[in-house]
Image (tube, rainbow, N blue to C red):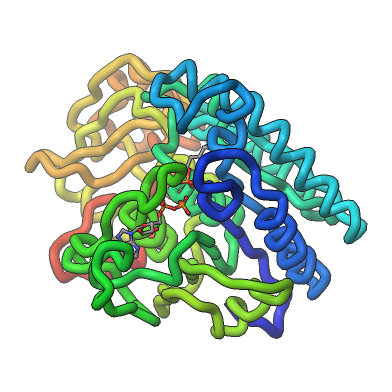
Length: 385
Ligand SMILES: Nc1ncnc2c1ncn2[C@@H]1O[C@H](COP(=O)(O)OP(=O)(O)O)[C@@H](O)[C@H]1O
Ligand SMILES: N[C@@H](CCC(=O)OP(=O)(O)O)C(=O)O
Protein backbone atom coordinates (compact mmCIF):
# COMPACT_ATOMS: atom_id res chain seq x y z
CA UNK A 1 0.00 0.00 0.00
CA UNK A 2 1.39 3.38 -0.94
CA UNK A 3 -0.55 6.40 0.32
CA UNK A 4 0.69 8.64 -2.48
CA UNK A 5 -0.68 6.73 -5.46
CA UNK A 6 -4.25 5.73 -6.31
CA UNK A 7 -4.80 2.45 -4.55
CA UNK A 8 -7.47 -0.17 -4.78
CA UNK A 9 -8.26 -1.13 -1.20
CA UNK A 10 -10.51 -3.89 0.13
CA UNK A 11 -11.77 -3.16 3.65
CA UNK A 12 -13.33 -5.99 5.66
CA UNK A 13 -15.41 -5.17 8.74
CA UNK A 14 -16.32 -7.93 11.19
CA UNK A 15 -19.65 -8.39 12.96
CA UNK A 16 -18.22 -7.29 16.31
CA UNK A 17 -17.26 -3.94 14.78
CA UNK A 18 -20.78 -3.26 13.44
CA UNK A 19 -23.16 -4.60 16.02
CA UNK A 20 -23.88 -4.54 19.74
CA UNK A 21 -22.50 -7.33 21.94
CA UNK A 22 -26.02 -8.74 22.36
CA UNK A 23 -26.93 -8.35 18.72
CA UNK A 24 -28.58 -5.61 16.70
CA UNK A 25 -26.92 -3.06 14.46
CA UNK A 26 -24.84 -0.35 16.14
CA UNK A 27 -25.52 2.77 14.08
CA UNK A 28 -22.80 4.58 15.95
CA UNK A 29 -20.15 2.01 14.98
CA UNK A 30 -21.39 1.81 11.38
CA UNK A 31 -21.37 5.59 10.94
CA UNK A 32 -17.76 5.71 12.15
CA UNK A 33 -16.72 3.18 9.50
CA UNK A 34 -18.65 4.86 6.70
CA UNK A 35 -17.05 8.23 7.42
CA UNK A 36 -13.64 6.58 7.24
CA UNK A 37 -14.51 4.75 3.99
CA UNK A 38 -15.70 8.04 2.51
CA UNK A 39 -12.43 9.75 3.51
CA UNK A 40 -10.46 6.98 1.77
CA UNK A 41 -12.64 7.31 -1.33
CA UNK A 42 -12.35 11.09 -1.30
CA UNK A 43 -8.57 10.78 -1.13
CA UNK A 44 -8.87 9.19 -4.58
CA UNK A 45 -8.69 5.48 -3.80
CA UNK A 46 -10.99 2.73 -5.06
CA UNK A 47 -12.77 1.30 -2.03
CA UNK A 48 -14.44 -2.10 -1.81
CA UNK A 49 -16.12 -3.10 1.44
CA UNK A 50 -16.62 -6.67 2.59
CA UNK A 51 -19.11 -6.33 5.42
CA UNK A 52 -20.13 -9.01 7.90
CA UNK A 53 -22.87 -8.37 10.40
CA UNK A 54 -26.04 -9.56 8.66
CA UNK A 55 -26.73 -12.39 11.11
CA UNK A 56 -25.70 -10.35 14.16
CA UNK A 57 -27.75 -7.33 13.03
CA UNK A 58 -30.86 -9.39 12.25
CA UNK A 59 -31.34 -11.99 14.94
CA UNK A 60 -32.83 -9.75 17.64
CA UNK A 61 -35.61 -8.60 15.27
CA UNK A 62 -36.56 -12.28 14.81
CA UNK A 63 -36.86 -12.75 18.55
CA UNK A 64 -33.75 -14.90 19.08
CA UNK A 65 -32.13 -14.22 22.45
CA UNK A 66 -28.61 -14.81 21.01
CA UNK A 67 -26.90 -15.51 17.68
CA UNK A 68 -28.84 -18.49 16.25
CA UNK A 69 -27.03 -21.78 15.78
CA UNK A 70 -29.36 -23.56 13.34
CA UNK A 71 -28.80 -23.02 9.62
CA UNK A 72 -32.34 -21.78 9.03
CA UNK A 73 -32.07 -19.46 12.04
CA UNK A 74 -28.86 -17.92 10.72
CA UNK A 75 -30.26 -17.66 7.21
CA UNK A 76 -33.46 -15.97 8.40
CA UNK A 77 -31.46 -13.58 10.58
CA UNK A 78 -29.16 -12.76 7.64
CA UNK A 79 -32.17 -12.03 5.41
CA UNK A 80 -33.39 -9.42 7.90
CA UNK A 81 -29.98 -8.10 8.90
CA UNK A 82 -28.59 -7.67 5.37
CA UNK A 83 -31.42 -5.26 4.51
CA UNK A 84 -30.83 -3.31 7.71
CA UNK A 85 -27.11 -3.12 7.00
CA UNK A 86 -27.43 -1.85 3.43
CA UNK A 87 -30.09 0.65 4.41
CA UNK A 88 -27.83 2.04 7.15
CA UNK A 89 -24.77 2.07 4.86
CA UNK A 90 -26.66 3.90 2.14
CA UNK A 91 -28.09 6.48 4.52
CA UNK A 92 -24.67 7.44 5.78
CA UNK A 93 -22.86 7.12 2.45
CA UNK A 94 -25.50 9.48 1.02
CA UNK A 95 -24.34 12.24 3.38
CA UNK A 96 -20.97 12.01 1.60
CA UNK A 97 -22.53 11.92 -1.86
CA UNK A 98 -21.69 8.21 -2.20
CA UNK A 99 -23.83 5.18 -3.09
CA UNK A 100 -23.56 1.54 -2.01
CA UNK A 101 -23.80 -1.35 -4.47
CA UNK A 102 -24.74 -4.61 -2.79
CA UNK A 103 -23.05 -7.81 -4.02
CA UNK A 104 -23.94 -11.12 -2.35
CA UNK A 105 -21.76 -14.07 -3.33
CA UNK A 106 -21.54 -17.80 -2.74
CA UNK A 107 -18.61 -20.07 -3.45
CA UNK A 108 -20.56 -21.44 -6.38
CA UNK A 109 -20.43 -17.99 -7.98
CA UNK A 110 -16.64 -18.18 -7.88
CA UNK A 111 -16.52 -21.79 -9.12
CA UNK A 112 -18.54 -21.15 -12.28
CA UNK A 113 -16.41 -19.44 -14.90
CA UNK A 114 -19.17 -17.18 -16.29
CA UNK A 115 -20.32 -16.05 -12.87
CA UNK A 116 -16.74 -15.38 -11.77
CA UNK A 117 -16.05 -13.23 -14.81
CA UNK A 118 -19.44 -11.50 -14.49
CA UNK A 119 -18.72 -10.60 -10.88
CA UNK A 120 -15.31 -9.27 -11.93
CA UNK A 121 -16.78 -7.14 -14.71
CA UNK A 122 -19.60 -5.83 -12.52
CA UNK A 123 -17.23 -4.83 -9.73
CA UNK A 124 -14.91 -3.03 -12.13
CA UNK A 125 -17.82 -1.18 -13.72
CA UNK A 126 -19.11 -0.12 -10.27
CA UNK A 127 -15.65 1.14 -9.29
CA UNK A 128 -15.25 2.99 -12.58
CA UNK A 129 -18.51 4.79 -11.77
CA UNK A 130 -17.44 5.73 -8.25
CA UNK A 131 -19.76 3.35 -6.38
CA UNK A 132 -18.86 1.65 -3.11
CA UNK A 133 -19.38 -2.09 -3.60
CA UNK A 134 -20.49 -3.76 -0.37
CA UNK A 135 -19.92 -7.50 -0.49
CA UNK A 136 -21.16 -10.20 1.85
CA UNK A 137 -21.66 -13.91 1.57
CA UNK A 138 -25.15 -14.72 0.31
CA UNK A 139 -26.00 -16.32 3.65
CA UNK A 140 -29.66 -17.01 2.82
CA UNK A 141 -28.75 -19.56 0.16
CA UNK A 142 -25.21 -20.63 1.08
CA UNK A 143 -25.08 -24.09 2.57
CA UNK A 144 -22.01 -25.65 4.12
CA UNK A 145 -20.30 -26.95 1.01
CA UNK A 146 -20.89 -23.68 -0.85
CA UNK A 147 -19.60 -21.24 1.74
CA UNK A 148 -16.32 -19.34 1.68
CA UNK A 149 -15.87 -20.38 5.29
CA UNK A 150 -15.88 -16.85 6.60
CA UNK A 151 -15.73 -13.28 5.39
CA UNK A 152 -12.05 -12.95 6.22
CA UNK A 153 -11.28 -15.46 3.47
CA UNK A 154 -13.92 -13.91 1.21
CA UNK A 155 -12.21 -10.52 1.57
CA UNK A 156 -8.83 -12.06 0.67
CA UNK A 157 -10.34 -13.79 -2.38
CA UNK A 158 -11.95 -10.50 -3.44
CA UNK A 159 -8.67 -8.63 -2.92
CA UNK A 160 -6.85 -11.16 -5.10
CA UNK A 161 -9.51 -11.23 -7.76
CA UNK A 162 -9.62 -7.41 -8.03
CA UNK A 163 -5.80 -7.09 -7.89
CA UNK A 164 -6.13 -4.87 -4.83
CA UNK A 165 -3.09 -3.06 -3.45
CA UNK A 166 -4.18 -3.59 0.11
CA UNK A 167 -6.54 -5.49 2.36
CA UNK A 168 -7.59 -3.92 5.68
CA UNK A 169 -9.33 -6.31 8.06
CA UNK A 170 -11.01 -4.30 10.82
CA UNK A 171 -11.88 -6.12 13.99
CA UNK A 172 -12.35 -5.53 17.71
CA UNK A 173 -8.67 -6.14 18.59
CA UNK A 174 -5.66 -4.01 17.65
CA UNK A 175 -3.79 -6.77 15.85
CA UNK A 176 -2.31 -10.22 16.23
CA UNK A 177 -0.83 -11.06 19.62
CA UNK A 178 1.25 -14.02 20.72
CA UNK A 179 -1.82 -15.15 22.72
CA UNK A 180 -5.47 -14.09 22.77
CA UNK A 181 -5.29 -10.69 24.54
CA UNK A 182 -8.78 -11.20 25.96
CA UNK A 183 -7.60 -14.09 28.08
CA UNK A 184 -3.91 -13.20 28.47
CA UNK A 185 -3.15 -9.63 29.63
CA UNK A 186 0.58 -10.22 29.08
CA UNK A 187 0.16 -11.06 25.39
CA UNK A 188 2.52 -9.15 23.09
CA UNK A 189 1.57 -7.67 19.75
CA UNK A 190 3.22 -8.20 16.38
CA UNK A 191 3.47 -4.87 14.53
CA UNK A 192 4.91 -6.14 11.26
CA UNK A 193 5.23 -9.63 9.81
CA UNK A 194 6.78 -10.59 6.49
CA UNK A 195 5.58 -14.18 6.46
CA UNK A 196 3.16 -16.43 8.27
CA UNK A 197 5.01 -19.38 9.68
CA UNK A 198 3.36 -22.43 11.29
CA UNK A 199 4.42 -20.93 14.68
CA UNK A 200 2.45 -17.74 13.93
CA UNK A 201 -0.52 -19.78 12.77
CA UNK A 202 -0.48 -21.70 16.05
CA UNK A 203 -0.79 -18.46 18.08
CA UNK A 204 -4.06 -17.35 16.54
CA UNK A 205 -7.18 -18.43 18.39
CA UNK A 206 -10.92 -18.45 17.73
CA UNK A 207 -13.59 -15.75 17.93
CA UNK A 208 -13.50 -13.37 20.84
CA UNK A 209 -17.14 -12.31 21.02
CA UNK A 210 -20.58 -13.86 20.82
CA UNK A 211 -21.17 -12.29 17.39
CA UNK A 212 -17.78 -12.89 15.66
CA UNK A 213 -17.12 -16.20 13.91
CA UNK A 214 -13.61 -17.07 12.73
CA UNK A 215 -11.46 -15.27 15.30
CA UNK A 216 -7.83 -14.39 14.62
CA UNK A 217 -7.29 -17.84 13.10
CA UNK A 218 -9.45 -17.05 10.08
CA UNK A 219 -7.76 -13.66 9.70
CA UNK A 220 -4.36 -15.32 9.62
CA UNK A 221 -5.55 -17.81 6.99
CA UNK A 222 -6.88 -14.92 4.92
CA UNK A 223 -3.67 -12.93 5.39
CA UNK A 224 -1.61 -15.94 4.32
CA UNK A 225 -3.62 -16.28 1.14
CA UNK A 226 -3.45 -12.55 0.33
CA UNK A 227 0.30 -12.44 1.07
CA UNK A 228 0.85 -15.31 -1.38
CA UNK A 229 -0.61 -13.01 -4.03
CA UNK A 230 1.64 -10.11 -3.08
CA UNK A 231 -1.09 -8.07 -1.35
CA UNK A 232 -0.31 -6.03 1.80
CA UNK A 233 -2.63 -6.71 4.72
CA UNK A 234 -3.51 -4.90 7.90
CA UNK A 235 -5.44 -6.53 10.74
CA UNK A 236 -6.53 -4.26 13.54
CA UNK A 237 -8.77 -1.46 14.62
CA UNK A 238 -9.02 2.32 14.62
CA UNK A 239 -11.07 5.38 15.51
CA UNK A 240 -12.10 8.51 13.72
CA UNK A 241 -12.76 9.42 10.12
CA UNK A 242 -9.08 9.30 9.18
CA UNK A 243 -8.45 5.78 10.57
CA UNK A 244 -8.24 4.13 7.12
CA UNK A 245 -5.95 6.88 5.83
CA UNK A 246 -3.74 6.34 8.87
CA UNK A 247 -3.70 2.60 8.18
CA UNK A 248 -2.72 3.34 4.60
CA UNK A 249 0.09 5.58 5.84
CA UNK A 250 1.43 2.73 8.01
CA UNK A 251 0.21 4.29 11.26
CA UNK A 252 -2.72 2.01 12.05
CA UNK A 253 -3.35 0.29 15.38
CA UNK A 254 -2.78 -3.30 14.36
CA UNK A 255 -0.51 -5.79 12.63
CA UNK A 256 0.81 -5.21 9.12
CA UNK A 257 1.66 -8.16 6.90
CA UNK A 258 3.87 -7.22 3.97
CA UNK A 259 6.06 -9.10 1.61
CA UNK A 260 8.38 -8.00 -1.09
CA UNK A 261 6.69 -9.90 -3.90
CA UNK A 262 5.53 -7.88 -6.89
CA UNK A 263 2.68 -8.60 -9.26
CA UNK A 264 -0.24 -10.93 -8.85
CA UNK A 265 -1.73 -13.90 -10.61
CA UNK A 266 -4.10 -12.88 -13.40
CA UNK A 267 -7.79 -13.16 -12.45
CA UNK A 268 -8.40 -15.99 -14.88
CA UNK A 269 -5.45 -17.95 -13.46
CA UNK A 270 -6.77 -17.29 -9.94
CA UNK A 271 -10.06 -18.79 -11.06
CA UNK A 272 -8.25 -21.89 -12.36
CA UNK A 273 -6.06 -22.17 -9.25
CA UNK A 274 -8.52 -21.47 -6.47
CA UNK A 275 -12.10 -21.77 -7.65
CA UNK A 276 -12.77 -24.01 -10.66
CA UNK A 277 -13.93 -27.58 -10.00
CA UNK A 278 -11.61 -30.19 -11.53
CA UNK A 279 -13.37 -32.27 -14.15
CA UNK A 280 -10.60 -34.82 -14.78
CA UNK A 281 -6.93 -35.56 -14.80
CA UNK A 282 -4.10 -35.75 -17.31
CA UNK A 283 -0.86 -37.62 -16.71
CA UNK A 284 2.32 -36.39 -18.42
CA UNK A 285 5.87 -37.68 -18.98
CA UNK A 286 9.03 -36.15 -17.50
CA UNK A 287 9.74 -33.92 -20.52
CA UNK A 288 6.29 -32.35 -20.42
CA UNK A 289 6.48 -31.97 -16.64
CA UNK A 290 9.72 -30.05 -16.93
CA UNK A 291 8.37 -27.89 -19.79
CA UNK A 292 5.32 -26.97 -17.68
CA UNK A 293 7.15 -26.42 -14.40
CA UNK A 294 10.32 -24.71 -15.53
CA UNK A 295 10.02 -23.88 -19.23
CA UNK A 296 6.88 -21.72 -19.19
CA UNK A 297 5.59 -23.89 -22.04
CA UNK A 298 2.14 -25.12 -23.05
CA UNK A 299 1.24 -28.80 -22.68
CA UNK A 300 1.42 -30.59 -26.04
CA UNK A 301 -0.31 -33.93 -26.69
CA UNK A 302 3.06 -35.65 -27.29
CA UNK A 303 3.82 -35.43 -23.53
CA UNK A 304 0.49 -36.88 -22.40
CA UNK A 305 0.65 -40.46 -21.13
CA UNK A 306 -2.91 -40.86 -19.79
CA UNK A 307 -6.29 -39.10 -19.74
CA UNK A 308 -8.70 -39.81 -16.88
CA UNK A 309 -12.35 -38.75 -16.71
CA UNK A 310 -14.84 -37.40 -19.21
CA UNK A 311 -14.22 -33.67 -19.31
CA UNK A 312 -15.20 -31.17 -22.00
CA UNK A 313 -13.15 -28.56 -23.87
CA UNK A 314 -12.85 -25.54 -21.54
CA UNK A 315 -13.00 -27.60 -18.35
CA UNK A 316 -10.26 -27.42 -15.75
CA UNK A 317 -8.24 -30.58 -15.08
CA UNK A 318 -5.38 -31.54 -12.80
CA UNK A 319 -2.06 -32.53 -14.33
CA UNK A 320 0.09 -35.18 -12.64
CA UNK A 321 3.40 -36.70 -13.60
CA UNK A 322 4.23 -40.40 -13.77
CA UNK A 323 5.89 -40.19 -10.31
CA UNK A 324 2.49 -39.37 -8.80
CA UNK A 325 3.15 -35.65 -8.21
CA UNK A 326 0.40 -33.13 -8.84
CA UNK A 327 2.01 -30.46 -11.02
CA UNK A 328 -0.82 -28.00 -11.47
CA UNK A 329 -4.15 -27.24 -13.05
CA UNK A 330 -5.12 -26.06 -16.47
CA UNK A 331 -8.02 -25.35 -18.76
CA UNK A 332 -8.08 -27.85 -21.61
CA UNK A 333 -8.56 -26.85 -25.23
CA UNK A 334 -9.95 -30.29 -26.17
CA UNK A 335 -12.30 -32.79 -24.56
CA UNK A 336 -11.17 -36.05 -22.97
CA UNK A 337 -11.96 -38.22 -26.01
CA UNK A 338 -10.05 -35.97 -28.39
CA UNK A 339 -7.04 -35.97 -26.03
CA UNK A 340 -7.16 -39.78 -25.78
CA UNK A 341 -6.90 -39.92 -29.57
CA UNK A 342 -3.83 -37.65 -29.72
CA UNK A 343 -1.96 -38.54 -26.52
CA UNK A 344 1.69 -39.36 -27.21
CA UNK A 345 1.37 -38.30 -30.85
CA UNK A 346 3.69 -35.96 -32.75
CA UNK A 347 2.64 -32.52 -34.02
CA UNK A 348 1.65 -33.48 -37.60
CA UNK A 349 -0.40 -36.47 -36.41
CA UNK A 350 -2.24 -34.28 -33.88
CA UNK A 351 -2.94 -31.61 -36.51
CA UNK A 352 -4.52 -34.23 -38.70
CA UNK A 353 -6.80 -35.59 -35.95
CA UNK A 354 -7.70 -32.17 -34.49
CA UNK A 355 -7.93 -30.39 -37.86
CA UNK A 356 -5.97 -27.34 -36.66
CA UNK A 357 -2.42 -26.22 -35.98
CA UNK A 358 -3.41 -25.08 -32.46
CA UNK A 359 -2.71 -28.43 -30.90
CA UNK A 360 -1.89 -27.42 -27.29
CA UNK A 361 -3.84 -29.56 -24.84
CA UNK A 362 -3.41 -26.76 -22.27
CA UNK A 363 -2.14 -23.36 -23.36
CA UNK A 364 0.41 -21.72 -21.02
CA UNK A 365 -2.03 -18.80 -20.52
CA UNK A 366 -4.48 -21.26 -18.99
CA UNK A 367 -1.97 -23.11 -16.80
CA UNK A 368 -1.21 -22.67 -13.09
CA UNK A 369 1.72 -24.44 -11.43
CA UNK A 370 0.88 -25.80 -8.00
CA UNK A 371 3.83 -28.11 -7.47
CA UNK A 372 6.60 -26.57 -5.42
CA UNK A 373 9.82 -28.45 -4.85
CA UNK A 374 11.30 -27.83 -1.43
CA UNK A 375 13.65 -24.83 -1.48
CA UNK A 376 12.89 -24.16 -5.13
CA UNK A 377 11.89 -20.54 -5.25
CA UNK A 378 11.71 -20.40 -9.05
CA UNK A 379 8.55 -22.49 -9.01
CA UNK A 380 6.98 -19.86 -6.80
CA UNK A 381 8.09 -17.14 -9.23
CA UNK A 382 6.32 -19.02 -11.95
CA UNK A 383 3.10 -19.17 -9.96
CA UNK A 384 3.09 -15.41 -9.45
CA UNK A 385 3.62 -14.31 -13.01
N1 LIG B 1 -3.53 -14.34 19.05
C1 LIG B 1 -4.57 -13.51 19.02
N2 LIG B 1 -4.36 -12.17 18.86
C2 LIG B 1 -5.41 -11.31 18.80
N3 LIG B 1 -6.71 -11.71 18.90
C3 LIG B 1 -6.99 -13.03 19.04
C4 LIG B 1 -5.92 -13.98 19.11
N4 LIG B 1 -6.48 -15.21 19.23
C5 LIG B 1 -7.83 -15.04 19.25
N5 LIG B 1 -8.15 -13.73 19.16
C6 LIG B 1 -9.53 -13.23 19.17
O1 LIG B 1 -9.97 -12.90 17.86
C7 LIG B 1 -11.04 -11.96 17.99
C8 LIG B 1 -11.39 -11.28 16.67
O2 LIG B 1 -12.04 -12.20 15.81
P1 LIG B 1 -13.65 -12.27 15.63
O3 LIG B 1 -14.27 -12.36 16.99
O4 LIG B 1 -13.96 -13.35 14.65
O5 LIG B 1 -13.95 -10.83 15.07
P2 LIG B 1 -14.68 -10.27 13.75
O6 LIG B 1 -16.13 -10.28 14.04
O7 LIG B 1 -14.11 -8.89 13.64
O8 LIG B 1 -14.30 -11.13 12.57
C9 LIG B 1 -10.53 -11.04 19.07
O9 LIG B 1 -11.57 -10.42 19.78
C10 LIG B 1 -9.68 -11.94 19.99
O10 LIG B 1 -10.35 -12.28 21.19
N1 LIG C 1 -21.84 -13.45 6.45
C1 LIG C 1 -21.99 -13.39 7.90
C2 LIG C 1 -20.67 -13.12 8.59
C3 LIG C 1 -19.68 -14.24 8.60
C4 LIG C 1 -18.34 -13.84 9.24
O1 LIG C 1 -17.27 -14.24 8.79
O2 LIG C 1 -18.45 -12.98 10.33
P1 LIG C 1 -17.19 -12.22 11.04
O3 LIG C 1 -16.28 -13.22 11.71
O4 LIG C 1 -17.83 -11.31 12.01
O5 LIG C 1 -16.47 -11.47 9.97
C5 LIG C 1 -22.91 -12.23 8.29
O6 LIG C 1 -23.02 -11.25 7.55
O7 LIG C 1 -23.48 -12.31 9.37
